[in-house]
Length: 325
Image 1 (tube, rainbow, N blue to C red):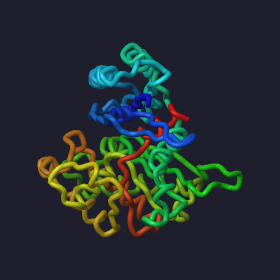
Image 2 (image 1 turned 60 degrees about the vertical axis):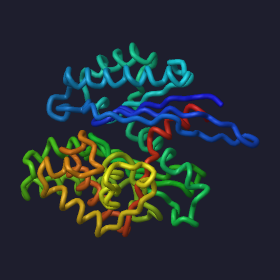
Image 3 (image 1 turned 180 degrees about the vertical axis):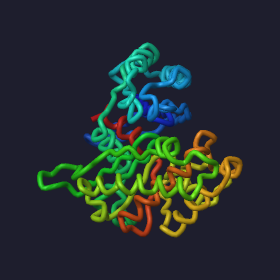
Image 4 (image 1 turned 135 degrees about the vertical axis):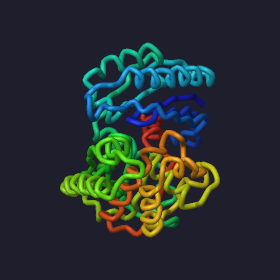
């Protein structure tokens, strides 16, 4: 066995996965979770408006990274590019002062963050979310091709694949668009709760982005819609009426259209305190979950699917696998 560490720094959260790489029969390899963590640091705070990282957002992120570096070392993994990979997504692509972020990260964990493209982000999410489906497949209702939807803070990634294209590629089509939960909240949903006019403006913005997605990714061809990251898993936890967040219960939960629409409407008309009182709600998602759920509901409506499957496995798992293969 050997260990690897994957870090994903998005617009809203920064997450860590420490995993053991287990070699089993023949050439088969398994990546087994050892430590999985998440902190809301809101790195992208104000980036949509100012074009730069705020100093306080950078310091929150660096504080979280220092804790992650300690955790990685505690698991016997040496900091460095052989066993550690960090990807940074939407907000980092947009920020004019990104070098300050890059230099700070390298000083703390010994590797530079990779400012991945939207395409790379989508493909890593796809691998992380679907690697286990090969064994489960249609017996458990997971029918290819898979549409993986990753709703982040700044952007949302779409990737369709799983059956292989004409040249045998895993991913058939993918696109990243700027309709993340933080971006939509800051751009449109400024009141608490938002007004009907604000929700309508956000909906129009999301739908316009989905028009662009459909020019590249055939959303309605999906056999299964798999949604990853905090918006989808939180909505799934609400659908299950869990008293607290339980990743094992949430993983592979199916949420039908009616429940998604009910939950989205409830979140958009609730106050900050009401949302904060939901058992599965992370404090850092309270003010952006309404926008995230709205994105999710518009996406599912566009696919024509009657449900989505929430997955706890996402880009982090894809990054971990990239250190193995």
